[in-house]
Every structure is written in C-alpha cells, then in structure tokens.
Amino acid sequence: MAIKVFKNFFKRIFTGLFKGKKDIKLGFYGPPNAGKTSLANRICKDFTGEEIGSVSKIPHETRSVQFKEKVEIEYKGKKMTFKMIDTPGIATKIDYEDFLKYKVGKKEARIRAKEATQGVIESIKWLDDMNVVVIVLDSTQNPYNQVNITIIGNLVARKIPVLIVANKIDLKKSDVKKIESAFPEYEVVGISARKGENLEEFYESVFKLAKKVK
View 1 (cartoon, helix red, strand yellow):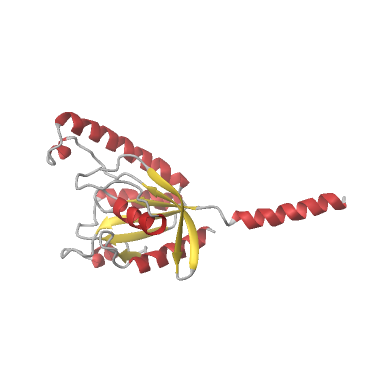
View 2 (tube, rainbow, N blue to C red; view 1 turned 60 degrees about the vertical axis):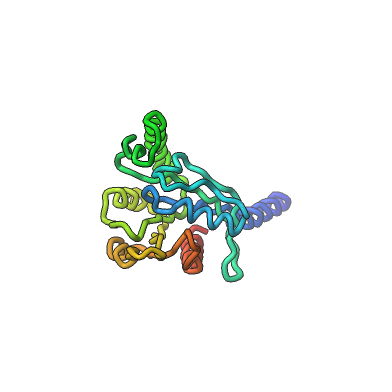
C-alpha cells in the first residue's frame, strides 16, 4: 500500500512538472498579403536563424499550412516555447483571374487558385488545434470586410485568445485607429513586420495571452 501511494505521489509530481512545458500553438491568420508570413519569418529568423516560408507580392503565396516547431522566444528575461503555425490567407472567393494580373500563366493561375482554395479550408480546420491566434491585418486597408468578420467569428466560436496585429505601420496610408475601432473588444498592436518596428509591444501582448493558456 505504501509503495502504491509513493508511486502515485511521484506520478503527480512529474505530471505537474511537464504539464506546463507543452509548446504553445501560435497561429497566424488573416487575409492574403497582410504580412502573416513576413511576421512569422521575422520571429523565426530572430530566434532560430531560419525562416518559416517564402513571401511574394502575388496573393496566396502561402497556399498550405506551414509550421516551425520549438521556437523559443525570449522577452524581458522570460522565455516561452511556441509551435509557430503560418496559414494561407483567408478569402471568401478565389478566382484564377486574380493571378493573371501578376503575369502568371493561365494554367499556373488555375493551379494556384485551386491550391489557395484548399488552403483556406485547411486553415479553418487548423483552428481547432490553436492555443493563441494572431490576426494580421494590413493597416492601409479597410478592416470592415467579410473576410475579417469570418475569421473573427470562427475564433469567437472556439473561444481562442486573440491578438490583432495592424501591420505595415511604416506606410503613409496606415491607420491603426481604424482597426481599433473595427474590433474594440480585442487588443490591437501596430507593427511593421518588414522593418521590425514595435515588436517589443507585440511580444509583450503574445506572452500575456500565452500565460492564459498555461
């Protein structure tokens, strides 16, 4: 009997020790060309020396979910380990003709459109696996659209902690306040993923949300 109690005691101790060490699944969501991969790349590059994926001016460059395991982020002496998950841009409609504007051949455009459509479906499915989601929006664009409402709606339904990033603050047309007005119930952090501006506030907000998961 004493041996059994002893074993159970150690089982509880070890379970407690490793329970909080599970990597936090951090997903990047948003419309095409908002800067999701650019932000994920900068974080991964800063803390692992490697990028997560390629970027392009052509929409839907990321057409399948890509991730990087064991990304240890350090901020103000604190460390957290994340599984970074970069998802394809969410769109309500993907037309192959959209790719033709970027001098992509018709055959390639049709393939890209099909892959991008599948990528949107895959992105939504992956939401069930997320601990924290960063919604990346282009702060030079109007935030009041069906795509953003769709993303927010899916997250609300799943009760996933959310941080909204207003990207591209280095551009003249950037309007962070408009995004704040559109989503007053969420924290909005203005950054420039391309130039690495205001990432300190971003990390602080991510750590704050991640603590709720643990």
